[in-house]
Image (cartoon, rainbow, N blue to C red; front, side, top):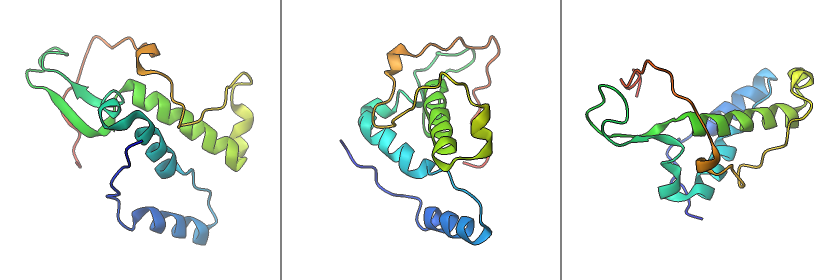
Length: 131
């Protein structure tokens, strides 16, 4: 596996420190997503992020190569990591999860080509503010 270059600085540790101080649980998405992306590898990670050739969507004349935001496949995989965090922490909301839930291991993600997403008829291709 290729290793991700850490760019978050002190933020992950600061988040954990504040959570401990405030007595609130933390779902460790930082570590789980790192495992997920390292498993996919550099090239494979683009299948979980907003990477689309020009003209993939109406009015999108330029290629999209955004290494920050998830596409539907990436968001689905990360949502499963959130569910795993809820279960691992024993949060009360876990009692509302589906009973037939299969546990998820980010080092064994679903194959991107096995994921089906039916796009909405209306698209917004503008990158959100704040990036």
